[in-house]
Length: 329
Image (cartoon, rainbow, N blue to C red; front, side):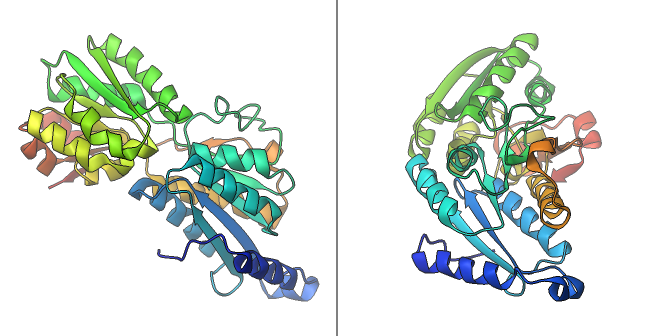
């Protein structure tokens, strides 16, 4: 789904015009959904966040809103830069969108600070309470709610010993500036201790630092949580795991498709779709975000990449292969 991403005044003006056209009375209601405009702020481009965006738009389409017909989308990408995310949020605050979506924690935080007079949804946010987005998971309390991508981190760490029973250590690489990553790393450290694994941490501030951090590990395995900056540079971590011949466990399925060994994780496309269904309740039923509980994806999938296993010199245990929801050959 390719679009021109811009912050132009013309785009904002077009949103105003289309929104005004869509505010008609009962005749337009009887003919179907009225015209709406939706702003989408995404922190960085990588397959998981892209899938969440596409799932969200798919849900709107299933609900009767089609881009180019009665749906105007203004998609903005911060390219992993917090200052840009803040600027995008400021522009959305003054635009006349009917609803705004923030994809990933940094963009959601910027939107929460800038936009207070229209509904805001978030997705791909690990801990909305810790990030200061909502008062509680059950009662968000303001104009913002959405879906969490909190993964079963303990189950993911367990995979290390399932692939390599002799493993004694795990290297964890994450961005020091991402709250969502810090939450996952704390969970991973507890899980590693329970599995008898020592932990070596490496933090990065930009995607450009990922390769050096990954190569510097002296561990039996590597774990990458759903960290936006690290996932954006995942190929460098895959290369390090292959050269060291150690398992790389990742936080979600898209990273397995890109060369990670395995995950027990969620589907970001389905998570985005779930968020889109929340948007439909706000748009069509006047649901109040303050009263809409933050939702999570209940079902996870075990996904294994057989090609990655071969490249890392790892034999897939038959019991894992048999129990996997998907094996990428």
